[in-house]
Amino acid sequence: MLEKSIENWADICEMKSDSIATQMFVAITEVIETFEGFAELDKQEIMDGLVDFNWMVHLIKHVSGGSIDLFHQLDQVKAIVEKHYPGLIDAHFEPYKQAVLDSNYSKFVITLSELNESVSKYTDINVKVHGEKNDEYGIWVIKCSETTVGSDGNHYKEGKILKGINYFKPNYKV
Image 1 (cartoon, rainbow, N blue to C red):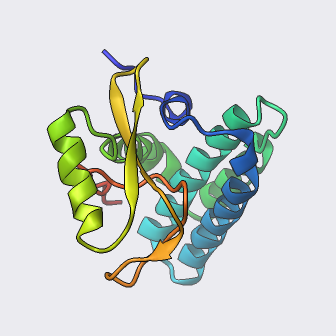
Image 2: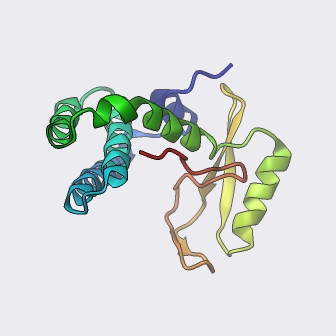
């Protein structure tokens, strides 16, 4: 049985250190999302940003081989959340983190049938994709083959990990 972890997720996706700049940008946007939640007095948005920032901190440290460690910054953001919303992290961080982990793993596909359905889903919106099999885990990862705008109006960057047909959004409410 596959142990779900952020580090295993990065390994399955074969993430490389050349993606760190993009990952850092995403991490910053998650911190911004957290603080936008403060501005809107929205605990759901605060926790969503915080849990996603946690994901990025783990991902960046793993992909960088440990040379970039943002755990101190994560702890600082958590302390700010705790100061303004005592108990919010204790009550919601771990289950929300698990919901995000499960959601991110749902992007992967297991069978060739799921792979073909996932590829068709993107072909139907004029996005070229391919599946990359991770033999160690027996999982297929759907990746964008070239940067484009799909007929759905969304931007797709070459190499981006896309959602397989079994994808579901994290379903956790604060």
